[in-house]
Image (cartoon, rainbow over all chains, first blue to last red; front, side, top):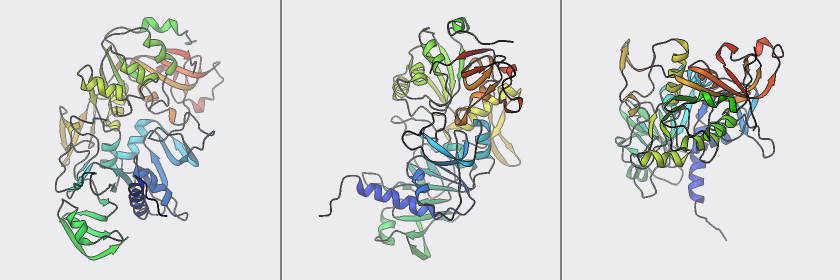
Length: 225
Length: 217
């Protein structure tokens, strides 16, 4: 018997996104991973690749979450979870942490979003009248990191595309996104528009185009991931 | 020089209508003993500068949800639904500022700077009400200083003169806020005699601290 449970497909999709984004990381990269799908990118980084993880609450060299019974109240990640640090890591104050971010010292940041568009705009911090959590460090990360990758489920639960022609929610940053990875596609923001580079196994270019509000430029060399 | 005082003796430092800065990132590096204590003072019309709104029903979050707080200047309130409810029902003003800008505004106050130019927030709601400047063709937001009457911070160790050492990621906003308020109260886990801290390791100089409270957490 094959039992499919509620939410299982969603978590498979999220893992697929994280797995694909992990391939964007090069040996020696310094990266910041946002909350949600981005956090699980770590789980898919090959062992022969050394990556340094920055956490905006004030550390570099972030390691795995702390095991139960080994939590230290003073070592947390940016989601507030008890974490650990590598023996080569270091701690600093918030000013230094954001100097690292804005100063161009991060090779990459991976962030979730509510919407993203073909111009590289990203919206991930508020839904007017409904949800106003605040931007935290997200605006600094999108502006400061050398490369911004957006990890996002392709459509909302009601089936509308989160890959917009133009974001209609308040922006986190203007024109800062470089790559969008969904469970269906990998799309690069280019000066000409959104370039569809890869599609997921089991889908078609036609399906991706149908499920995407933004106009897509189809690469001559579409790959499958 | 001995700045160690009892919890009750700091009551007189708090007044209605004052601006208070609170260190910490979520619960990490937050002066929980002091916040629990001042919650009982029923202060009115406070403006609080704090990174985030913490968790509801816990030290910082509970203090911020106190009905007498007038305004919160912060980067994130999403972890505390009580604060969102108060804001939505019109009982609380909230200024949301990108975290890296907020810390620079506090640093400016403590460093005698008129402001910093940041590219963060250009083209977003973060630029609303802010002056913008172009430098070499690139647009920046001018972030001006934010100070307070009082900073309530947390450190790991203090000597009696007020030199401080922070522990791991509990440092966050604490050393920056220590420089940006008229008076600074620090809650510490361990108080040692003057001379017992290695001078090489001191992170905040005693010139910035005014009162030391032993943590009860």
